[in-house]
Each structure stands twice: as C-alpha cells, then as structure tokens.
Length: 287
Image 1 (cartoon, rainbow, N blue to C red):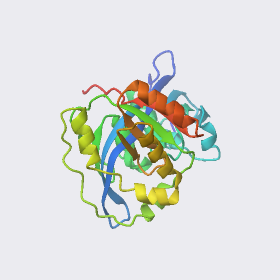
Image 2 (image 1 turned 120 degrees about the vertical axis):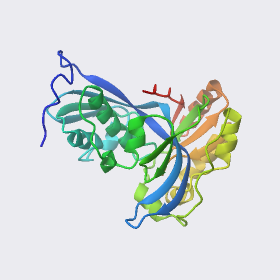
Image 3 (image 1 turned 90 degrees about the vertical axis):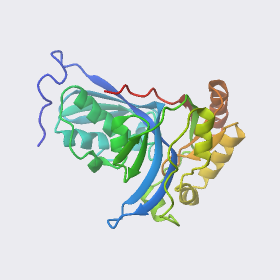
Image 4 (image 1 turned 60 degrees about the horizontal axis):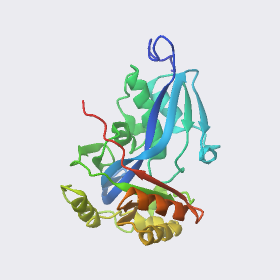
C-alpha cells in the first residue's frame, strides 16, 4: 500500500530533492556461468561516468514526468522503473526524470534512474528496501554509485583499486538492444572470470582491460551490426581502447586527453550517432 513519505522527508519546507543517475559502464564483462533458474553469472569491472540522467523527487501523489532528449524513448513504457522503485520503498512521491541517456543502451539507464529514486528517498529518511535486485541486477551497483567488481547476477560487489582519471567518449548508433535476446544468443556461457583487478596507474589499467573483454559483444553485434561500426569508428578516432558496455548498443572509447575526446565525439556525432565526451565520475566519499 502506498503511503506518504516519512514525516520530514522533504524537510519543513517540503521542497524537492535531486539525484544524479550516472551512466554505468562495464569496462570489462565476462560471462562465467548460468544458474539453474536461468540467470547468468557475470564478472565485471563497473565504473560511472559524469554524464547521466537527473531525477527530481517532490511530495506526491505518485507520478512520473519525463523530459530531456530521450524522453520519447520511454513513451508507452507503462510501469517505469522509477515508479517501481518508489512503490518498493513505500513512498508516494512525484518524480521528474530528465532523460539524457539513450534507452535500452547497455549503460544502466533505467537501473540508475531507479537507484537515484531510492538513494534520494534514503537520503531524506526513507527506509531502503531489503531486496533492490527485485528492480534489476544492475540496481545494487547503481545504488552504490562507486566503481566495483560486480559478480554473481550483480549482487556481489567488491571495491576496486584506485582508478586514474579517464577521458571517455560514449557512442550509441541509435539502435535498441534487448538484453534477454543478447544472453539467449550467447555461444558460450562458461568463460573464465576476470583476472584479479590490479593496477597502479593509467597504463597498467589499460593493459589490464586489454587482457579482458566483453563476452556479450559478439552476440550483440550479430543482433545489431552497427555496433561493429561504432567500435571501428572509435578506434579510428584515436581511442586507446574501444569496447561495448553491458549488452549494448552503447560503446565507449578511452582517449588520451579531454581535447581529443571532445574532437572525436563531435566527429562521431556527424554520423548521426549519439556521441558524448565525458570523464569518470568522482568517487563517492566513504562512510
């Protein structure tokens, strides 16, 4: 049953609160098995970019308003993850979602949005639901909002060594990819796990990532061939490493500096793709 937020959740002035829903990137993703219930086991290096959606929460009744460049991608969706998150938390709030990220793009957009709702409510006194994986496997890592090694079906999170600054370009060719279809199309589901995450600087991180891969890439490219074009274009634009994130179709490139990243993003956008230069988000303070 829906209820009003706890007393004082928005303070005496009953003002709104805002949370960032940053893009989630799988710098590496190995598929290591499949459980008896059909859920796949993964081993992934997850980070967050500065770019993302913006979630604003205000006193209810429960509602969702979507704006932003990718708002149209959510038309007719029905029960959005933001609304499901509010219901799971038992809070009746008015949610505004500024949708800046492509939909069904492999960068955790819906999960990050749901996590932002939960994080905002918790910040103001609402109890955190016990099982946030009910909203999706990416929700726990998006809720933490910090770089992590993500294993199991997404519920096992371990911290990573300190990450160097990275200049990134994210590119989406404008095709939506179904995560279930990608997993169904996998040719192999029992790859070895990632090597232990160990690096001391940017060069060692790149070496580590080059020794890894995204096991979902071949299946996703078979379903959406433009992904291969994006990866080739990123490499041609000067990326030191180009890889698909999650189940696609968004790909990322790691570039040697902010200026070359911005130049690459501008050039790639001329091909009719969504392209954005960004950096790793600041890591949340511990404690």
